[in-house]
Image (cartoon, rainbow, N blue to C red; front, side):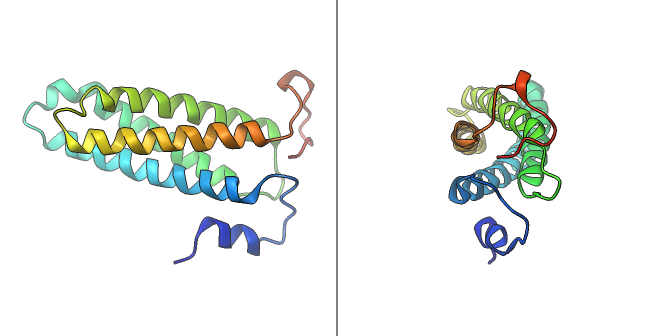
Length: 148
């Protein structure tokens, strides 16, 4: 199986001064989280008390989309835009915290929610670590061509 790290290493585009291990971990954590959120939403729909899980289902679905988008943007380096990448990493970390909190509130009754909360926490941590590692100026001083 090819990993994000293998693909990044094969990319002819310049990846800048970013830690490729952190980048690969973040991409993979986003993909895992997106899958976990999608599966959790589906499992919630199978529960007898589905009405009580409406917020969880919506949260899972929304944040799966955010994680998928983050993984996609992080995987592209041609025409890189540091502003978008930083904003997306911040949004993904916030979304993963919210989804992790929501799923954790159901974790004692639903194993799928417990597992999803774990995936969300891991993705939140990976996004936060990568964001801290970026050598970007503050948002108000960035230009479109600022790289990492």
